[in-house]
Amino acid sequence: MENKPKILLVDDRIENLIALETVLADMDVELVKATSGNEALKHTLHHDFALALIDIQMPEMDGYELASILREEEKTTNLPFIFISGVYTDNLNVFKGYEKGAFSFITKPFQPEILINKVKLFVDHYRNEYMLKSLNESLQEKNLELGLVNKELESFTYSVSHDLRAPLRSIDGYARVLYEDYYEKIDEDGKKSLERIKNNAQMMGRLIDDLLDFSKVGRKELNKDLVNMNDIVNTVIGELQEQMKNRDIEFKISDLHTQMADINLLKQVWINLISNAIKYTRKREKAIIEIGSSNGLQPIYHIKDNGAGFDMLYVNKLFGVFQRLHKEKDFEGTGVGLAIVQRIISKHGGTIWAEAEVNQGATFYFSLSKHKHTTS
Image (tube, rainbow, N blue to C red; front, side, top):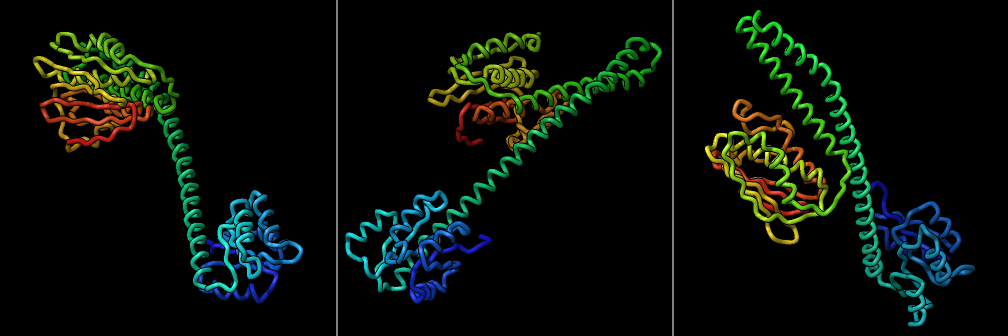
């Protein structure tokens, strides 16, 4: 804390204020003294107090009247105070003190240790509240900054992707013209170079499209509705028939639980996960892809394949942008698909994880609500 906690001492007798000041001298606090209720109220306009020690018997405005005003003012409505009195010590007055909002009542003469311990209790509470408030304010500020950075990053990604599209189309277009109109006039090395230019331009185009999809997910608002998972999965498999030409693929789909979700975003999750399963089982004579969900209030969905799998040593890289665990020559891809999947699921408040073994296939799990999991 930059400033010491402040304690307001209110007593019409100077000697009593000096006595309180002496008792509290060793505490790491700032003492502000007032000899009347009006002076005390003026101090509350300019200071934030951790605690007030108030004498009851005072001329013009007694401690009870001061306490009532303090409770009515917005700034001091929660200010803890302790009544100190050598006169009004009977049970009726003690009860009245508590009725006025006192947190404690000390009668004179008092033992210094009792006062010190009570003051310390309130000062420690004030420090803890101050620290908690500072941490919350700092956290809110950091969250705001992070939100702005993410928006700027998404806007940057979107703008750059759009700006890159035009020159890429030109490269791809001119490469196609050369390939189609001048193919016979180019030697073998030139043809290979031209083929590389064309393929890399197309690869870059796919990468830009994936980046645009990734940035769009961050900006899209969720539109949740009750989603029939079986309908989505069957629709996706139907749309991916082109990828399965001349393939022997068996889908084993159990009855999937319905879920509240954004149907369009969730469809993209299944497209990416099923496409991956189809792709990474390409080298299997017979591909088997199992899709199901667990029972419970928070269903966990899974998609399991018998494909290439991956080394669990690198599982933490799996959902990062541009992170690929297989060589391009073995399995094509941009390394953005699973990042999109994770962002969509996180946007729903859920989690995704995977388990796999090299050449033994992979299983991806996801839930649309927070779920603890461990990976082997």
